Image (cartoon, rainbow, N blue to C red; front, side, top):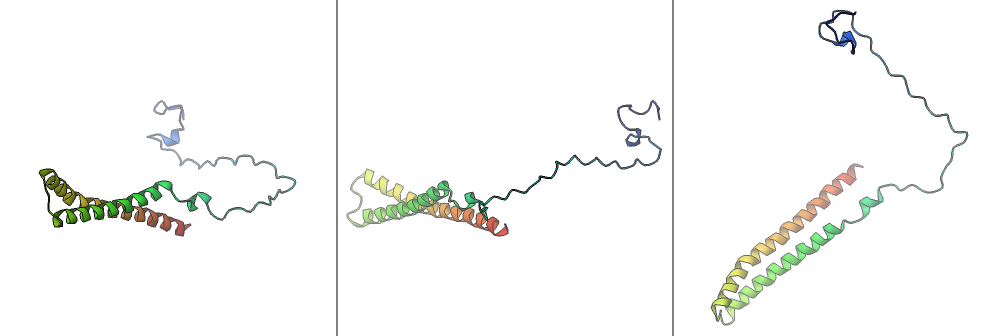
Length: 135
């Protein structure tokens, strides 16, 4: 076994060119277990059935839900302003006209952004509810 083809640091059975018998599987000895205690200590505190952190609401999700509602309300409010701006007496100056044009573009975008944010919050709750059902 002292062939110069093999690296002496490693077992030759695991090196290229070994023609000997298959190496025997080595099993690591079990680590020593601590001695069994003389008595078993039982605590009187009830253990929680589930993780208490899982039941708390994420404050960021609550804030996102509030922002979603605010965006939808703001979008509808801007649409109402556009409608009343054109219906009352019409724009009286170019600034009024430009403001109505900006509001006319921004109101549906704002409302849709609020709806999309609400859908995102619902998606996060749906994913978490699915995880909770598995455990």
